[in-house]
Length: 425
Image (cartoon, rainbow, N blue to C red; front, top):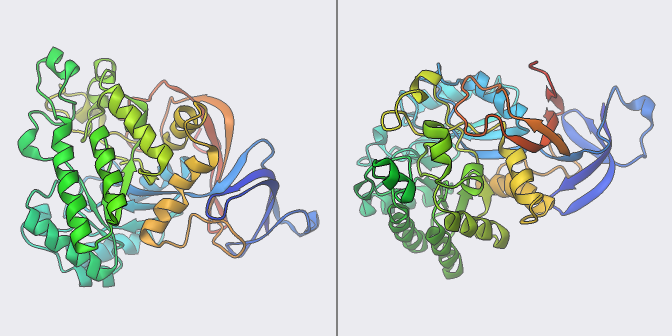
């Protein structure tokens, strides 16, 4: 039996917030409080001064496995996730080969079952991510896919995406959408504005996202599908999601830490390390995103963890790939830039990183009530640390060198300690 002693236990699923002990046996939460004796604990973790919360849930990661495992693989991605406090993640389908048939899916899930954390896999929406032929949705769900997404490749055909939403609704799972209209983008990865103009490289305007979000809000309303607007970056898109929710659409929105932490000016200092799709935008967009987090328009915080090698990111801006890693800095960026600034309470931050994403997929996680799986993160919200290394295979992050609050001390999955502070020193 494992005892976590004297931590501030925050469980957004039921609003619990109290300094107490947690007792764990056989991979589940046995009870809270002091009513067990110390002698019954085989192992004790002193959590004084720390927050004890459900293991974090990230429904948008890229582990590059199969096909590009020099960037990341299931094992290294899982270690990076555990180091960031995550115990459940959902991998996107843009692997090589694409996760568009049961054989590829079966291989991933067979290997995922051996990992220290829970790794779920989404199916592609379209065969080969080409946006023309739907996958066999019922078969993919039967083989263990948790939802559908062509993330990385926007679906531009409205008739096709309507059929895709109907497929997802019929299967009872979410469909997650990358919202950029390629015909409106001059250069991917940088906001079209003052910085792109100064660099003379075009850019990706916010309207590219807005028109897709507007379309999909209305299609969600029409089809009844559960639609996840991925990595929202535009302030106007936040308003569109808010409108869709008021209309009764089953619209959900996610945001990444880089979109609530950075603006387009960061490109001048970080170059291709700040290149991602969609790009970080203006301070007005960032303020609107924070407003959406505060009022509940944006449901979830995700990382869009997107590893690339140093050789790839060291290319000039135009030829470097888009994407940054995020699993190991996500919680700390939330603590630093949302909680300590007063935008969100700790309960609200953790809700967007635990019970809300778990609820989108109906996962049995994100909740540490008695009897629930013992998936837990223990972190010190007041400990300052410098981002100077990563457990991930890749280091493509604009937050290298940043000083952040919120150091992860332990991550526990199914009652087993899968990460301890300084495990990889």
